[in-house]
Length: 167
Length: 389
Figure 1 (cartoon, rainbow over the protein chains, first blue to last red):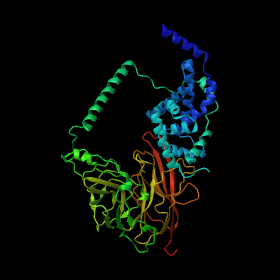
Figure 2: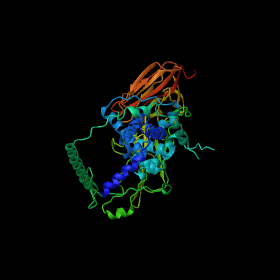
Figure 3: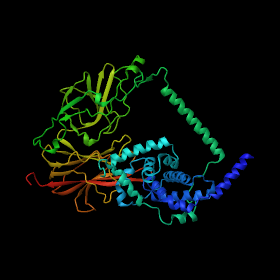
């Protein structure tokens, strides 16, 4: 009885705080897309599909999602992984889209990292998430994210040079 | 301080998803195919199979790593105790210098072709192993000369120039009991043995051409310290001109690569600018014009043979990687003179005077034909009519 009341209470509270998904999309889709773009090694198609799909599924969940942004990130990463696996199983030839020339060096270096290393470095350094937030959004442990970040930084320094301090 | 990669990362902010993506979210939900979930019976079967695999792995792990007795059988049937391999502080390791005298020197010794090292300093070793004294006491049958290498560290080819077969070796060491052996292996980055080790001694000579792992071992009061590196020994009168890497291996080493060897015994190669400076660099990706200079330029007398040797690529590459010799022209397409596929036979070319390009085309694909990366590297070759030209 008590549980049911609590559950009903939660539902009631949540209904009054229903997420504005359009605003969330406006605020977070860019960052999510960039993280997925890097995570997939430059697969714009998968990054866009996973972004859209994750938002669509979150909307279908309605008010049951407590932390929509974290939920969407986790779902999107899982979708991107699934899509990659699906492509591998189907053994279909994949055309790699031409990326902007200014990203050639960076993406070349990022492709030398593992997908998780790439995603961690982008979420933490570009999108400004803390390590814990990054780990939550990727669905991995905080300590794992820390290791990925350390290795990613080391590799990127080696691949892109580390002797160019900005004055 | 801001590192370059951090500044490069900022460029990603220019990336945005397509503008109509929100419309897609609203109108076409769930368009990524979801893998069908397993039915209950399939789940049960999958669980049983997973448990069986887990149990088998556990049994295997116990057999392999159980502490009691702790003995294993080697290939020849003798019982070998376990050992401990530890990493020492490099600064505390005694310096050991192996000196080789390149006996392949030809007339005109100023040529870059004489860049085979006269002195090979192997204090670079990044793999340092030693027997842990306490472990040795624990295992009575331990032999201090037994070493298990937990994977070899290989150096980039351009930091380890080729040595000439037959070159005299001068071996000196500040450490007593130092031994230097060359272990023939299947390839520059292979650890598969291809024959018995060759022990080098002061005054000895380098063995026949091939790929070797050079290992230096010092035994001191039950402590064995090991350095190892990669060496390619080539025939006297030849030289290693160009390396090309098409990737990076699991330990950071580049998978091979290509090499061009050319004879200079008859003075065919006049100049080889940039030898040794071109290899070891990962192939950039992608290639705006599919051109990446090697930093190497050759000047060759017409009629001198140039061999394209040992083309190889990273394991599993199903792409159309090949090396080519072409007429030079300002822009693609180049007129192709000859080409060999990876793992193909060596090809010796002899060209009339003119400007040529040696091109390495890398097309890396996995077994599923997914494109990994592709691109060219080029090396200009100027063929002149005679030495007096």
